Length: 137
Image 1 (cartoon, helix red, strand yellow):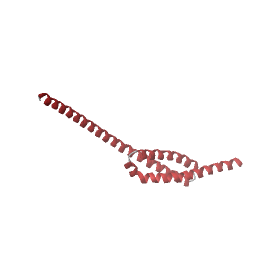
Image 2: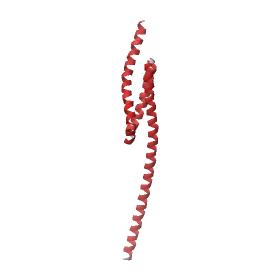
Image 3: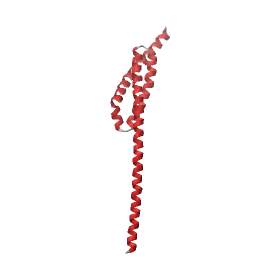
Image 4: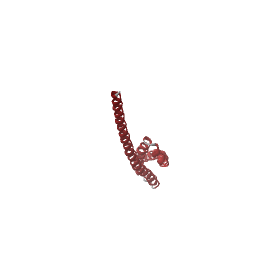
């Protein structure tokens, strides 16, 4: 009987040790999750600012087009488009809440990108036609 009691005590000690170890792992995991969530939030803010900058670049490109500097517009479009898609891709790959927070911005960027793709095609055509015209003169 005494050996049975000490056996149970031994089991209790092992169980207690396992519980403490599991609790420690849970706390470590929670701290890790908090750090990750903080990192995602901070990274999301940086990415959101970059996306806003890309959208501003696209808007500047449109304004430049109205001023007639087509070559500059094409260059701006390519840079801004690449930057915007990089940020949009990051948001899509991460937590949904970030995508939801920037959905209006992402949609605006996508609409601008679609419009600019069309504009770029037209501009490239105009530049080619202009070069052909210049070559013929």
